[in-house]
Length: 88
Image 1 (cartoon, rainbow, N blue to C red):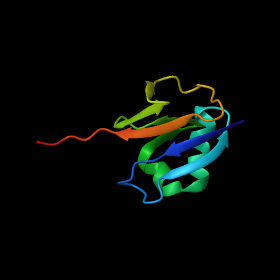
Image 2: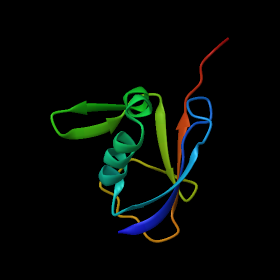
Image 3: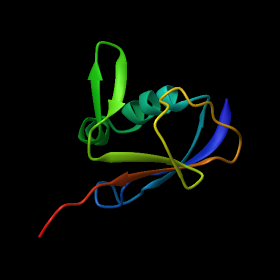
Image 4: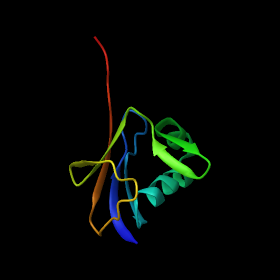
């Protein structure tokens, strides 16, 4: 387990910075579901037991976008979820 900082989009939840102990990205997704199921369903898709971010959500670990949903965390990692915004 690693102690990480998670920043959720402020447009979805006011208290958007959380400190959690998780080992990898999938555990983080499950932890978010435990913390706030409404936020979880806004951001993620769950098919059978696999959880993936919805198309508009980007995952950044230590300011670098990642696509590996099995990435292993280290103490002090900072995870940020960025939402794509469209408009004209």
